[in-house]
Length: 422
Image (cartoon, rainbow, N blue to C red; front, top):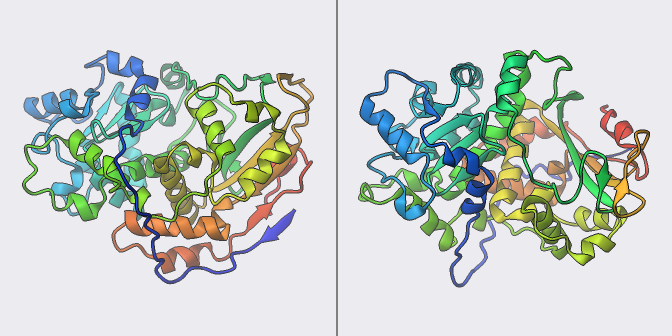
């Protein structure tokens, strides 16, 4: 293993690079996210407000607004404004009053989690959302500008076997056209693990029972990601001045900002363009056809392409919104929760490779804490400074100064890489 430290802590405010853009955009990906969770949107009324003391009119508005799929049909600011419009500090109770669930236990576990997760960075993010939905019919979790809502998969909040059976029925189909559990169409595969001191936060225990502490890190990471999407569209500097828009539809306000390049993700140093990584993102995250260049490429060629980029994760090449969300998620998760991310590219000997049970999964490239790579770190700090009011860049840098970026030796096994935590 080779150890790298930050060459600089970027302890001063970073200057954002704004690119001049012409024209307007027409698709922010919201419809694709809605389509990926079509079962949820078909079952109108199957989730309900977690707080039973909401008035009937409040319940009716919440239930109506979260199922809307078109911007021009969304609720108005007067009907369901972002939480931060009327709250200088968004409390647990403020969030729960706008939370809808498919099962009572999801709301109860979410309430306990919010009471435990009092991190100021996480709290500041909630001001941009109109509501929170937690359902067994959602997978993957997502945010959409059509409603201003974050939709969370119930699989993040189960604590026992019975609850797990309820919330893990819906399959995430992303990447289904590239690989199965025992085969790969390409000569490479991206993989990753989020962990705290070597413990996998997605699967912290081997049994079927978990406690609150087991689920908090992965829930924190997810919430920062999805709430960053909300703040990308509607940062506090904008939603605090929505006066005169009470009758405007929230979906149209949000989409207008996207269409005219007013998003936070449009204001930071651009992602290094890579046609091959963009093609991979289309094939994996949108299940589009696999391009010929991907079929020809081996793991070491892909590793070379990704390594020279300024992205922290391959998901960045799906959209500018995902690029920003990954940067903020990883920066804040590492500094506030100690969540490290190890990424690797697995090498396969041929296309359509049937993976044997004893395969060692050699990697062509691997790195832990890529967020600390200087050009990636710079972009993460830029994005965070625009997302958060009064962002403490000095404090964040100090928290990270003793954490290392670790590069793996090409050719070692995935298990050897994942298990190495100095």
